[in-house]
Length: 187
Image (cartoon, rainbow, N blue to C red; front, top):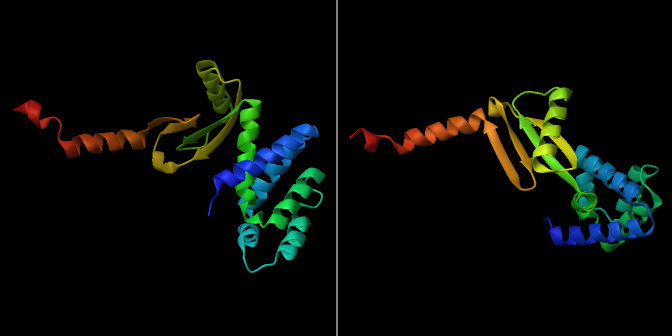
């Protein structure tokens, strides 16, 4: 069960110690690596959440996965998580760390969903447009393709949603017809 408070606390602790030891960038790279490992491997996520596998066995398996891929600070942090029985929260902690890092560095996550893949030139133009119109200096652009949009795009950033898709237009038209808004004006 997700526990955002716990994840935020552990992430904040790691950020604080990483800043104190001047290893913030290394810790950030490690958390991005762990996010990718957790997302790529369902077996690894299941291992982390399994109540059947003992903590010492989980620790050995996790060490084998991260050995040489993360810094000593992150390795010690993960060992602490295993000792405290919090290894099941690793993905959520990594996500919280990345979010807190982005806030600390002033990086804004922007998600752009289109009906078809976009060219790199178009992505750069959109980034430039967002920077200039919204005054956002640092942007981390994530793109996705969703054919259900039919055309147009959906842009998400800083709790804002801009839906300029054909799918939304069709839903609006369907709603207008189902409510029959224009019948009263005919009579």
